Length: 298
Image 1: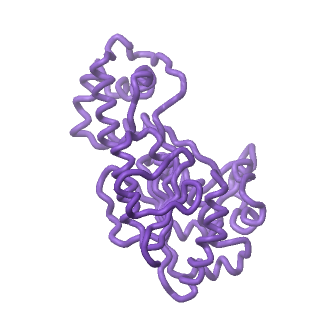
Image 2: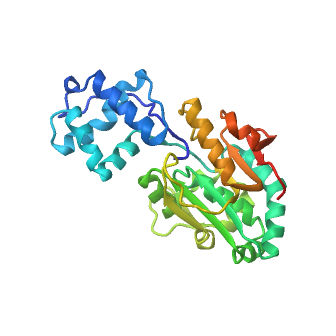
Image 3: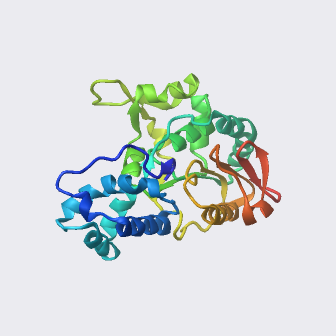
């Protein structure tokens, strides 16, 4: 769900589904549903956007109203997943918010390399990974600009998890193919070391993340509002621009969960407009712009 936000494009009427069958009560149900499932708050100004995003699903269902469609969701988890995907937008890009990667490279990476050399686990989580640009940037920065040294690191106990609520976004992330222009924001030595030409691409040139990098990442569908299956702490968690449409109580609960999922001395990176507040302030200390460290000794 990285960069997953309430939709913001212009609404449009959908052929075959009349707005007359979509009322205030329907929007309230949709808003309550998306808040309960994802933590996102849909304001009143999103009413017609919710219509335009969900109307194709209503039409496909052959039901005659939004209300009837919404009545089916409790017993139809597959369609519920499609509703969530329709009401969230995945927007991200390579090397986004570069100061995070600069801090990771200069401050965090040396310690992770020392631990890896000693045979210890290194555990990283991109929570809300969207279409993969964040986790691939992070892994390339971790492996470094020296390909031979990076391959040696890759043979260690390196565990990277990338999760998102959107199955479509995860499919794109797993594919790990992008327009070459999308990777231009990466430092050139990283791009040269860890990207390869994508086979079978037509039109604009495309690049693929090198297989050695792809092998290090496990992608999982995960709703951050639900149960987390991980039972071991992480050294680094990135969760950026996921919480910008959450209400304050939801943000505070989620950040506290992240803090408790970090090993002592571990780092949490959040989006440029997000802040730590609530119970998590007792667990985290700020160490840079939107960068926090779990209190305690590593």
